[in-house]
Image 1 (cartoon, rainbow, N blue to C red):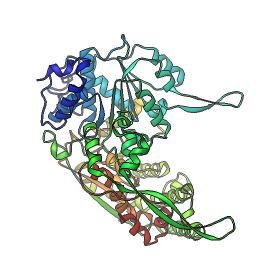
Image 2 (cartoon, rainbow, N blue to C red; image 1 turned 90 degrees about the vertical axis):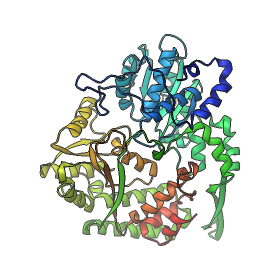
Image 3 (spheres, one colour; image 1 turned 45 degrees about the vertical axis):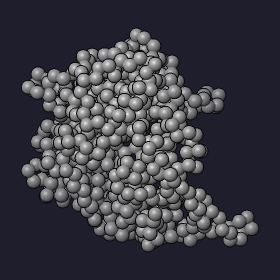
Image 4 (cartoon, helix red, strand yellow; image 1 turned 60 degrees about the horizontal axis):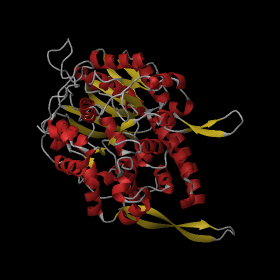
Length: 566
């Protein structure tokens, strides 16, 4: 036990940092019993049940180390894999802050703000594990939120969308910038947590600006993300800005010059006189001084690989790809799209704008998913993917009444699938943005978890984060997001601590002879930055250009070479 580390005086900050760096690699740390932590089971259980929203719990070995590291480091990134209990680490830190007097509502700089897309889930977990801490969820109209802000809260959960500043039109036609950030800046906030906020990868976003600005006022700042860095070295810099990255790395321009290897892309274009000229542009192509970069990043990040967490039982995740043929109607629409894309490539080539390329790419994505996404909701719209998943739900997935989670990006296709399940008499729940009733969403989730007759949960991007779906054996991604962090987050809904399944299956459904044929290689390449930085698998690969996006749709063989190029 090391209770003295919780009470280091300010003049021993250097010692605190040294011990934090040492603890980062320790196998275990003994925590004292925390007065504000709920260790007890609910009246319905004899011992704490992980899936029960009313039971408390104990800290696992890696969580004890995590809580102690967060306490000592004060600022840093918790990057443990999805499903291993990052929330418990952070809430354990808050329990220590409450016990030491650093968290409260009466004195200056004692309050904590948690910025999370799953703010509602955080609020529930805080009430579960820290019942003696006053927590508030910032939801509702601005007037209702203002009333909540005036309460004597100790921990506030707010979504990135609510926090960030935004443009508001005045009556005279002018614009002013306003948002809840300006309100929260009026409070003395000592601790800031930002959880799984993808917008932090790019410092120019409104969310990144708001969080970084709020972080300047806090003496404790913790970021959490299971996959914080993909694609580019500059994402590592941007995500670490609120936790002191610039102080450690230097200015952004210096970091880029020191650690980013750039290459020139040459392409043909026409000048103002119609003549063909050769132009070039820079792109990130790799890392320079890589070992030095790793040494700089390491003390700021606590990241344990699954094999280092021998105190938890996470089910084996078995990924697979199911290839389907488009229906005749889908093939006709995709052929029409390819014809237009080839014309754009002939006329514009490498000068095509990203917005135009993305518009064509998303249309192709919709066609591959199902024509309801293009033509509006209606039962039975052409979709080979919906046909495939219905065949599995009524067939292989029905064995032993196994529960399944189905992810679909496009709402009309999800509505179509829900109608098909209803017609087939298959009990299911739907979780999407159309349902804003918090109590109903919670009831639907509990029905999926506990009702044997509810075998399927359908979800859009609302199921990506902070939802525990350990009861499911199958996770099916009908639509693939070309972001490995988000796909891993999806898989982490079912492959996590507390699962009753020894094995869970994650299936991506992809359409043959379409842009989706290139997805596996691209996802592997996009993941490469994080793999390299954390010594997990491979090297850094370059990013796709807008023209390469269009070649993906058109079926140009060059896209495969581009996806695999180093």
